[in-house]
Image (cartoon, rainbow, N blue to C red; front, side, top):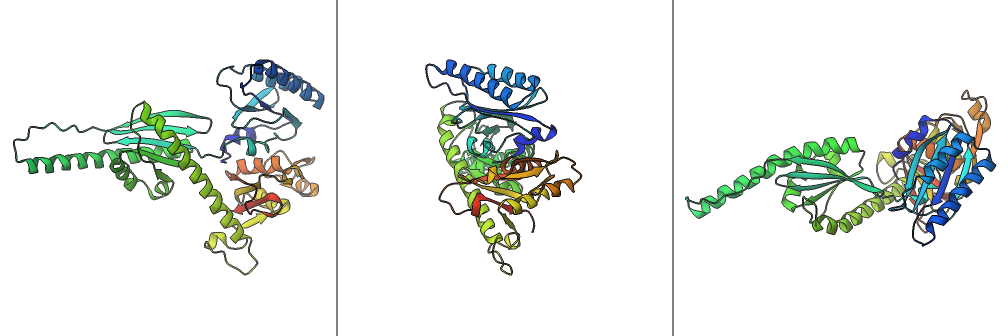
Amino acid sequence: METGFLRPLLDHHGPWASVYLDTSRETADAAKLQQLRVRAVAESLLAQGADDRTRQAVLDRLTEEAVSRAPAGRAVFAAHGEVVLDLPLDVSPTAVETAWSALPHIAPLVGLLDDDPLCLVAYVDRGGADLELRHPRGNRSLGSVDGRDFQARGHRTVPADRAEWHYRNRVEEQRKRVAGQVDGELARRFAQSGAELLVLCGDPKDQRAVHQRLPEPLRAATIQVDGGSRGAGASKRLLDQEIIAACEQYTGQRLTEALSRFHAGRGRPGEHGALGPDSAPGGAAEGVPAVVDAARSRQVAALLLAEQGAYGRQPVWVGPEPDQVAVQRGQVRAMGVPDPVSVPAGDALLRCAAAADAEVLLVPDGVPGPAGGLGAVLRWS
């Protein structure tokens, strides 16, 4: 899970109201259940001491929910009378959960949001490309890149073999010309969008022409999917499952690579990791104290969390800024924070991850991961 969507939370200080609730509409009495859930949120926040302005801002937002196309759930985070972040969830929370705390209670998001990457999808042909940004919680068109589409018209007054050669040559030149336009625009849009993966669809020859001209770093983040064409219709709908499967494969490979780096990085002193200097011992952290120390210095490249881990509830001490975090209260006071507060480690570490643009990876049950359920792959030793 990329953590960029959490960055709005870094611009505000608490205390925070955090709410998780089921908003699915799968039963006949869904509307009545929703009213009861919102009432439970109001009562819980009042009992925890939330101020009236913030509590009302949360309730106003929850009652604005559209009946149609409701997501599986919602997570709402508010402070000082303002809803700062309102997230649709991919998995329904099992119960209404609220918190009034110094930090936004963001740890549950790891299990309630899909881990599929943000994808830039390009439907390419000899005339250009249609661009689409795909996210687990919705797709958005990014317009088109247009080139001159060559259309052959057959006045073949020269021998057939020569005419065929000219035709093929013009088609190939047109393909190269348009590919050059498309790849430059793809590189620009990919950087702007924050996408993690570029998916090329369309005719295999057109895909190859674009792929060969992409900058090397972008080519490494690109996959090609058979089929698909420009324009709306059945061809795009039939392509969805292939793109979903490609994203799942990408996510699985990313976790496998991160775990390999983690296991190599926590080797015994004096050993060298099998994956090169970046994975040498010291390139990993394990357990709350070590991961907190690494997070404080923004060393964490990937935070590894076990699916069933109690690490998230262990208390740590924090100040108002993400880097003001430690397992001992005195350490935070030494950072110039007069009154540190105790918060769950999961919330503090996800805040650190968002501030450092680190990714968060959920390690499924049964997959060998960090001892105690918490680890990190480091950017440097």
